[in-house]
Length: 200
Image 1 (cartoon, helix red, strand yellow):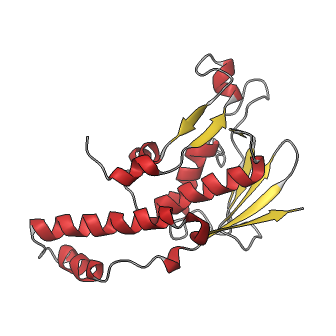
Image 2: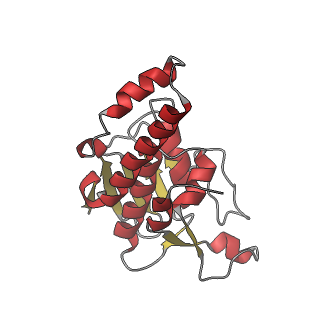
């Protein structure tokens, strides 16, 4: 299986998952997510998927500092409705990483380890997402803005040709390369495209 080399260079997200430990899946040391796994789940790699990954990466690091994040212990809020724009794509990626779900998630074992109702939309926030630890109530707002990482100017021309069905195989290949080039540069500029605000 071939994929862009930068996938392997993206920082992984390490978590502890008490539910999986109880059920004999992983030990108490937890496991980690990498960007390739998220791309497989999403079905594509784009600035939105990359942004959702970065929101999770930076948000969890801000909440847990030097500790591993605890999957299932994070409430996630979005300003947008689920049906708005790319909210569904972003929420799916973050749900995959944090375990947080809307109302359709795991109901728990006799009240423990529930994952449902930990993700909320139409929240009264001014950020891309807000993460809150269930155990201590600490919250962080995360803003993702990739506008400083501009696409290659040739992408627009190639996209128009592709959408019209006029692109050659070489042009289609070039479009894919340029598309992933921007995604790679977004990851390279994570500290510029992500802003964290810790809430009291």
